[in-house]
View (spheres, rainbow, N blue to C red):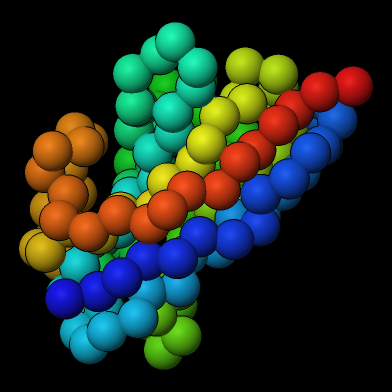
Amino acid sequence: QVQPVESGGGLVQPGGSLRLSCAASGRSFSRYAMGWFRLAPGKEREFVAGINWSGGSTYYLDSVKGRFAISRDNAKNTVYLQMNSLKPEDTAVYYCAAHYNPLWVPTTPHEYDYWGQGTQVTVSS
């Protein structure tokens, strides 16, 4: 079992950058694929990025490809989301989630086993 805790959200101007972190307490962090989701007002929770146990496979929402980068440090039980060239439409609460399968990276929320509490990202001038 792992418990993700997100940090790093905040207010940023369009074109700016933020780096989100997700520290996961518990054992066997490397047995989990990790994902980032976001929830904006009036919208459904959507998959943003995911990474397998080694970091060798990553997946992205089309609208963030080339702007966001997911990575992980298994020694620190932490996964990151580097967000560059932020746009107002990126405004949302961002959630980190863990899926108990190191190889398969799901893109649907219901397949994830553990969730963090979320961190707010607001992109506005």
